[in-house]
Structures are given as C-alpha cells and as structure tokens.
Image (cartoon, rainbow, N blue to C red; front, side, top):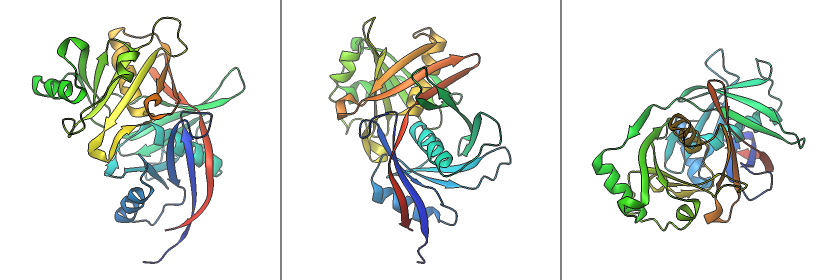
Length: 285
C-alpha cells in the first residue's frame, strides 16, 4: 500500500478546556483513501468517531464528510460535525455563503454557523436535522430499554424514537440525579443506541443531564453526543418539555464536563458548543 502524508488534527468538542469534552480525530486531506482504509484507521484511533474531509460532490456544499466509529460508518453525528467544521476552517476553508457552512454527509446537507458569545468566545452550532423517525417505541423495545437501564416502568417517564441518522431511542427519567446513578446492563442493551435525559432542579447552571450508550458501535458510553442532543431537543421542544434555550451537561460519569448549547431560532434548532485543538500535524496513510 502506498502511503501519503495527510494533514491531521485531534480536537476536543463541546468543551473550551482540553480533555473535558469528546475527542475527535480528523484526517483533513482524505481524498484517495478507500473505505477500508478509513474504517481501519477509525478502529486504530479507537475514538468514538474519526472523520475524513473530502471535496464535495454537491455543488451547494463546502466540503464532504465521512464519519466512522470503531464499529462502522455513520450518516451523521454531532460532535464530528462541529469538530470537523472547526478543522476545515482552521485549514483555510472559506464558506461559499457568508456566515454559514454547508457540510455534505450521508444524511445530506447540514448547516453550520459561528456564534459569537458575549464573553468574546466563539462556538460553532449546527442546525438539528429533522427526525427520520419519532414517537413511542414498541412494547418489546420499551421492555428492552427498562432491562438495559435496570429500571422499573414507573422510573421512566418516556421511551421514544429520536432517530436523525443514528437510530437513537431516548428515555426520559425523573431527574438528572437518576441519570447519573445509572449502572446499565450492556449485554441487555445490545442492538440499541440509547440516550437518557433528566432535568436538574430550577436554578442550576445546566438544565439537563444526558448520557448516551452505544455498545454495538464499540462505544459503551459516548462522552458528549451532538446527534442525540439534536434529536432530544426537537422532541422536547415539540412536547413543551424544555425552554427555547437551554444548556445540557454530559460526560460527568466519565470524568468529562461537556456542555451543549441548544437554541431555537424560528424554524431552526441549533446545537452548539466550543471546540479546542489538541494535536496538529501530519500522518502517513
């Protein structure tokens, strides 16, 4: 196999402080890599996701992104979207539209914007894609979720589909404390991509705690998960279970401190967070 030098970065997403978010490996010059090479490299990094930046095939897109976990390819994922956009801009990318990037991925086009905060910090946010599937899950899946979470029926308020590419199922618990106390059964969870959310008491800095379990993709628990939070936001906003603007905490159970900003603006729901670069250089692949 002929090896080629390619620009590479590793970033931390949904955190302004290194090592407290969700790490992402990004191959910036991925043109010419085979599917097998991408999959092999993603298994080698052993991160929840590794991405590959490519020239777009859609004339409306600024770049094309392929997203791999150690277990396979995803049509869309949130923290890879924000981390890859950060790397594309840092590598000199210039959006076709002023103030907005358009990413082409397996799900289609995803819009991304830069948000300037009052503190002077800048974060990226993507427009939550529409749900491909929503509503309550079947009785069989509901029972599997209860077994996987080791909870009784009266401890779980809702179990619904929030499928936006990754086939997420969401379970809503009575509190953030209940979410953090979970000790799931990963054997019972096989075949599920399961997100869990619970609310903090009024006045807390964060409004919700989220955990994401994906054992079938080689990631028992994902530290901070943009796609899940996008699906949760669309569902909760429609149901009136959250305000138009709120903050999610995720990763505490893994020693992280991820923060996801959710903001509804008109017909769009934006899922945002900060990104910091930890590694820049080249790899031979």
